[in-house]
Length: 243
Image 1 (cartoon, rainbow, N blue to C red):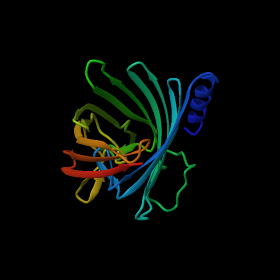
Image 2 (image 1 turned 60 degrees about the vertical axis):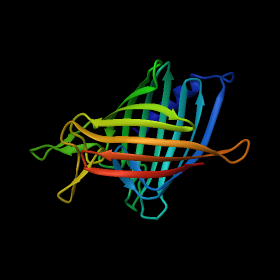
Image 3 (image 1 turned 135 degrees about the vertical axis):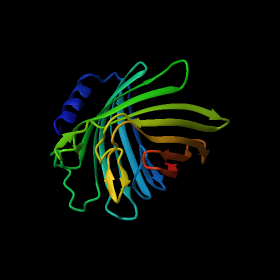
């Protein structure tokens, strides 16, 4: 897996030239809690991001660290390509709450997971469908005979964007279509963490966001997200600031 993103980056570089417009982005979010696809990963967190886009390609990194100092941190690498209404991507997730960090361990029981994703946004209405499947790394489950199996944990989401005056809104529903690993859309049961056993609705959310003008050239973004996870019988409300 560790050579895959190097290959993608080389292709990314060779597919562009000096005449192509290059866009660089840098920012960060401050969130009251880190909720991902219907599961809480950590408490109040700083989440920086940066990336570079050339043509239809985008290569970037995203991270999260618990500001309470409880040990959780995440560092992701991502490569995307947009073609018309389609977007193709590869994400290398690395997150750990163990103080004995080893980022360069790419074994299947380590903290890396490689996800392939595809999304499509319609022209006629602001509706987006996304399919995300972990294809390598830490994504296993034990079958009924106690044997380790690769889960190919998958998250499918439909989201609809709209606005009311200056408030931008995004409604989404996400499902896990088959059995998943505990790493992915896990839930708590009988004091233990489990993956979904089959088809399950794991995320129903409504996100509201707006920009607050600070100066003529700078605005501060704020957002709130109310979400439910029927599979976990859990609910969340997250507030965030975008810098």
